[in-house]
Length: 407
Image (spheres, rainbow, N blue to C red):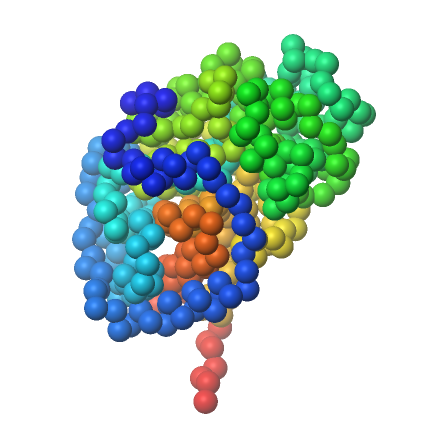
C-alpha cells in the first residue's frame, strides 16, 4: 500500500485527528479518574476471553501464555480492566509479546487486526529508528553531525546564530535542540500548530529562533522530530516513508500503513503515522532484540542501546516518564516489590509501545482518547499488570521481596 493512500480501514475520526492534533497538559484529576475506572473492573458485565494470536505470516512468532511465563488469570484481569470496565469506547487494542512470541492480541470498539490507527507522537520513535539506519549506512556522519551542514542547500537561514550553527542531529533526537519550540506552549514560535500552517515545513523549522544553547536542557516539541526526519530525506533523496519502506518497514513486514505528508510532500517525522497493532508492536520487539528481526540485523545494536540511554531527566505530561533518550522515553515502575525500567514510545490519546528488557516483554496499546487526561494512566495500569503477570521458570511471581500483609 502506498503511504500517501489512506486505507478504507482508517476511521474518519482518526483521519481528522491526524490533521488537527492538540497537545494538552494533563491535569491531576486524571489520576483519580483512572483509579476509579480500574477499581470498577471486577464487576464489569463483560469479561475477556483469551484467544491465542494466529500466525498470519507477518513475521510474528506466536505462542501461549504458559509457554512464555505469563499467568493467564492475571492477564485476563488486566485486559478486562482496561478493555471492558472503563466505561468509554476509546480503547482499541492491547498486544503482549514475551520472549519473542506474540501471546495476547485483543481488539475492541470496532477495531480489528487489519485496522490502522494514528499512534500520534509514538511515530517519533519510528523516525528515530530511521535516523539510526541512516547513520548505520553512512548517510549521516553520526549524532555529532551539524544540522546546518546537512541542509547546506537551504542556507542562509533566518535568525542565524552560533547556537543554531552548533545544533547537531543528537540534539534533535534527545529534544535539546534549543529551537524556540515547546509542545506545551502554543505561544512558542515553533509550536506544532504554527508548523502545520506553514507552506514549507523545512524552511519554517530552519528559520526558527533559538531559545537556549543546544544540549542545555530538554524541551519536548514536534519541530525537532520533523527536522530529524527531514534530514533523512535530505541525505537519502527519498521521502521518509519511502526510506522506511526499504530499510525498516520492508524488513519488518509492514506493508499496510499511512504516513501523513506536508504540503511539499515531506513526511511528518513528528507523527501522523497510522499502523496496525501488530506492526506497532514490531518496533518494540526489534529494539528488545538489539535491532534483530527474524535473524536480520535491521538496526545496529549500537544504535539501539544508544537510543535507550536516558540523557535528560523528565517530569512532564503525563508525569509517568523519568527520562528521555533518543525519541524513547524511560519510566521506572514499582511492581511486585521491586523497580522495573520501562522504555516506551508515547503518543497523544494513550498510544504506548513499551518494552521491559529484563522481562523480555513488549506491550503495545492503541487508544483514541485524544486530548484526554486519563489514557496514559490506563495504559500504564495495563503495563504494570502485565509485569505482575510475569512468572519465573518455576511458575512463581517475580518479586524482589515478600510484601508484608496490610491490616
